[in-house]
Length: 474
Image 1 (cartoon, helix red, strand yellow):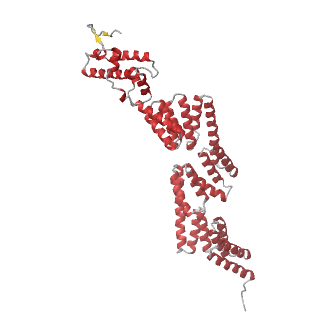
Image 2 (tube, rainbow, N blue to C red):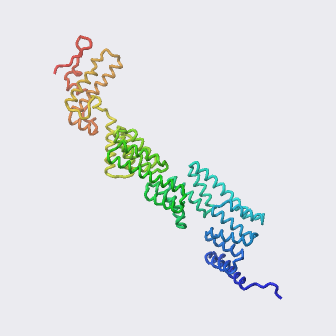
Image 3 (tube, rainbow, N blue to C red):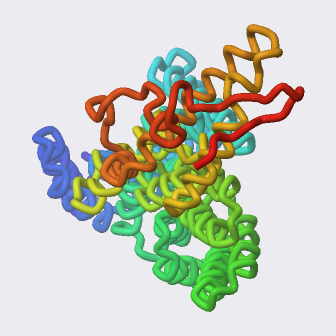
């Protein structure tokens, strides 16, 4: 006589379970899931069926569903060790280290020598430490450290959206926008309403100076989570930055350069983290500064823009022009070379050649400066200036000076002659103005002095009265 009989339903459920086990061993987890579900539907009070389905869901990376099944398993049987172990693993994969640790402790109470639980408990402690280090790093704005910690945390908690979002946010703050967008997009594919992921997508667009699109994502994030403080702040900054920049641009277009300069300065105070937009603001302020003849400040602003974005061609071009305007030709050539290496256009080539010519000219003697005239001086003005400088530096005038002074004045006297020889000859003057070499145009041996004054040494003399300079009659 049989004391206990197995119900047909129990037998059927066991059959589903065995089929599920066979499929699981073949790694056909989707079909295994279906059979374990049939077993549960047939016999919903059996803890092992939930445990088996949890294991299958874990293999399918459906950890939240696996967590629910594991918790149901241990509710049905608090001594179900595998149930507690799987619950702990699900918590760990989802990034809840404290809850995971409690589950592993329960396993160790049931079986103190369980090595798997011991190792997983250590993993939970490691995960907590990475979280602590990441929080400290974020507080100190050490975003590289946070990314480092999150990469290691995700190796233990692969399904934790919170860790992924923190990593993505820090990647965005580091300017690694494609990586940040990739992480956020992966989450949004699984959960299109995830406010944190929407915020990060908006943050990337905001930092890439796509402000209108960024605002759309921030608004969407706030719809999903009205209390999302980061999205609210970013949305406010984005709108303020756009408005202030546009106001500055309008003032510049209206030739209100002082107002534009001030508005760009105010815009730069809104968000120091927005590198790309701030680079443009610095360049815009430099343009306004150049209009206001604040050339040194304009150069500084262009340098600030380039530090933020070293690929910003407009900033190099603006700085190069400021260098040209302040006769810092070596620096101008350096910037134009950088531009031409990046964009080999005919315009950039022309700018580089012009700067190189000015640099070459700046390294020669400035004959206009020697005579004390402007570059647009007339022939008569050049002659008058020459007579004046020649008289000033003539050796006879300094015969009573020390040998050192005599030598210096003689040198200046010869330079005056060189200058006049070139600037008084139309052909030589054109070649000189165009930056051509003059070495093959004849020697500078004081020919200008002789030609202008006639006689030896310029024909100057002093009369017997001390200090009286006699100019030869014309």
